[in-house]
Image (cartoon, rainbow over all chains, first blue to last red; front, side, top):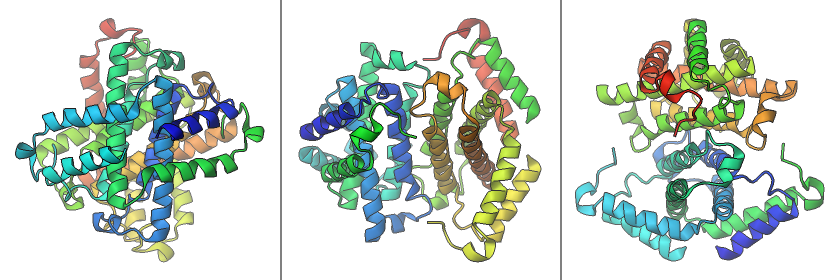
Length: 108
Length: 108
Length: 108
Length: 108
């Protein structure tokens, strides 16, 4: 993860893209990539989405990669440790949704 | 990252949420979280987005965590190695956007 | 539609919000509202989404309203006639997806 | 608006797409189109977004059309009067954000 963060930073530096990489713009780019990922699933049933063929999976894998790239980049620009942020949030979720209370129930 | 993946898997298992965690649904949840992140930036200028106050940053950090949690979970359910996917995609981007051609230019 | 456009414009004028209503920001707000709409459906099956109870439907109706408000506002700021834009796009779609070729098939 | 709703309904009927047009799927498609609209603005400054050139504007206009098409379709499938929903929501917003209190201030 840390190596990847540095490679992404170098990638942006080499292209002089820091000027475009405001947190606002990166949050937009992240949302756009998340929607490109979503697009692959919009007309599939849930069952079909569990059984992607190799070609579909390769495309989805690329989109997953794009989302992580922007997520790492945005966290880096903001000075946030992404893995720690997720670990802390998971702990908050565990307290908010105790297993014995929400077991087998969809939220909201 | 790997430890986090396992903790998220356990979190879902403990709540019997596998039934809801189809790739289709997880891609939706990911897009929703990416938009919650975006919401924090929508009325800020780019400059303001570079200088979040501690309270704003704490909220944004939580959203970054949520996005990573769903991204890891979706990748896990699909059997995709997320870090490898991002590393491969970064390499594809480097070929697609040679530094000497796009230096200092916004894409599209 | 035209009456609504004028009411939304007055609403923004009265609050001196033109400064925040750049097309960039309005496009973000629109995407955020579309995701809030999406959120209501993320853990429902397709079948359940066809049979919302009155309380769910009331919430979804509010989100549909929010999306239209920002869509009208963004179109207004850009000087685009929204209904014409949709009518033209529908015609383009009809040519792109001839009924006899795509009948009963999901796209991509 | 009403004529457009009927044309969109016929468009879907002719292609036997009712089976794919669950509210869940249409909400996904709407979010995807909103993100395609967003994509055009992600690397522009706010100033640039106010001064699109004719080619950019034509593309943005198509995306605005797509968003409205799915918004009308989703409302139709749910039996919601879209214009009424927006008018009601605008009234709720007017009460929530009194002009004299929020004048010139960005929300949140």
